[in-house]
Length: 117
Image (cartoon, rainbow, N blue to C red; front, side):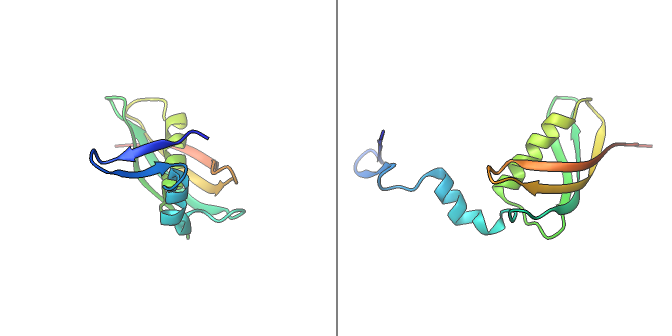
């Protein structure tokens, strides 16, 4: 096992992998209660765009009975990056979201381009 010594410059604070918890353990302890429940489908939407400067932006989203979490944020962002192809267009996904055991999010539904007049 590889360990890394953590120091504040004066004192040794701990050793990653031995004393300090992993990033995954900290995330689970902090936000685990917000994570999607396994086997549950959440109905909702995501509105997003790819800006003229190439930035992927989630404008709004909501999935009924699902709180925001780092895992949901990552999955929504990955979905937006895969789906937003044309700069300046606004997209709306409507459908369901569920999370697999490996924390990968699955989005099933319809994707529309929002007309701006």
